[in-house]
Length: 397
Ligand SMILES: *Cc1c(COP(=O)(O)O)cnc(C)c1O
Image 1 (cartoon, protein in one colour):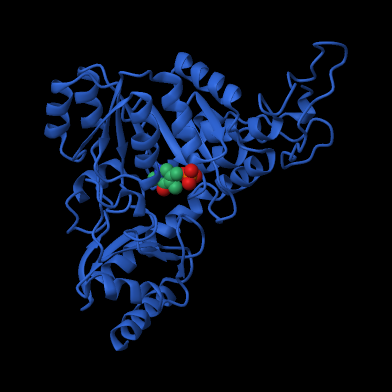
Image 2 (image 1 turned 90 degrees about the vertical axis):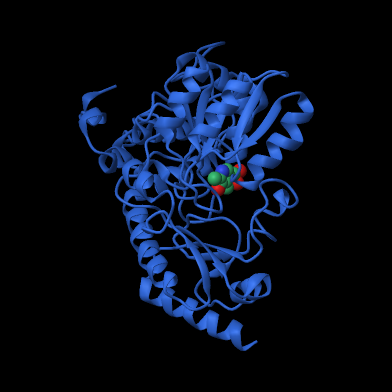
C-alpha cells in the first residue's frame, strides 16, 4: 500500500482507547474515506479465474468491512484472532461445535445467560455432549468437579447474568488447566474495557456484541477472541461452512460502537455505582447485587480483576416479592421495559418472566422478586428520580 494511504501509528504500544479508534481503520485505499466503507456486496470481481483483488471472493468467507472490524476488535482485546458472528449465540455455538465432539463434557456456571443454557442443554446435550452445572464462583467446587470427570471446557460468565456473581478467572484457569480443561469467558457484561480474560490465562473470550460493544441497541452480533492459531482456524472453518457471519452493515455498526466503548463503559459504571449505593439504602429493597458495592460477596475479586469500574448492570430483589417487582418494571418512565442490555438508554426487566424464562424449573432458576437494570448513560439523578417514582407508584397500586 502507498505510504500516503497508510496510517503510521505503532498501535501495539498504545492504550485501548487509541487502538479502538485506529486499529483496522486504514483510510480507504481508493478514496481516502476516513471511515471504512460498508462493503455491501456478496461477491467480488475476479480478474481472470482466481484473480482476486485483495483476497476477497465471497462475503460469507471474508468481507473488507468485517475484516476492518475484526482487526479493531482483536486489537482492543489484545487477542491474536477475532471472529465476528451474526449473534453472540452463533459465536458460542461455532466455538464449541468446532472444537467438541459427542462424549466431551462442559462444566458450566450456575448463573449464566439463559440462551447459553438453552443452547447447551437443548442442542449440545442431545448431540451427545455432557453438561454439568457447578457454583463457578467456588474454585474448590470447580476443582472437585474437574477431579471427578474429564472436561473439555469450563464456561465462565463474570459478572454473571443476572445475579452479577464474580468468578476469579485466574484461579479458575489454574485448576482447569491442571486438569486439561480449557476456560472460556463470556466477557459480555464487563466488555474488553473492564476485564481482560486472555491476560488472566483464559483460552477464549466470547461476546454478545449486541450489548456494550454495539452499545446503541441497534445491532445483534457476537465474537470469538483467542490467541491459539489452531483453534482459530477451526472456528474460522466452521464459521465459513455454517455461515452465521456478521453482515457488512452489522460489522460497521459494531465497529462504530467500539470506538466510543471506553467513554460509554466508564459512564455506565459511574452511573451504576451511584445508583446501586442509592438503592442499597431504599426501603423497598431486600438486596442489591452490584460488584462495586462493599456488600457484594465478590467485591474484592472484582476490584482486582476488573479495571476502572464494575460495569452498568445491577440486579435488585424487592421486599414486596414478584407482584411488586412486576409493578415496578411497569411503572418506570425513563427506564424502558425491555430485554437486552448495554445500550446508551437505561432498560429494566423481570428476568424470571423474561430473559431467564428458559431456565425456569432448572438449577439456574432466578428469584422471582428480582429486577435487572441495564444502567444507561443518562444523567444519574434523573435515573434515581425515575426509580423513586416507580417504587412509589408500585406501592400505591
Ligand atoms: C445477550 C447475551 C448472549 C447472547 O448473545 P446474542 O447476541 O443475543 O445472541 C450471551 N451471553 C451474554 C452474557 C449475553 O448477555
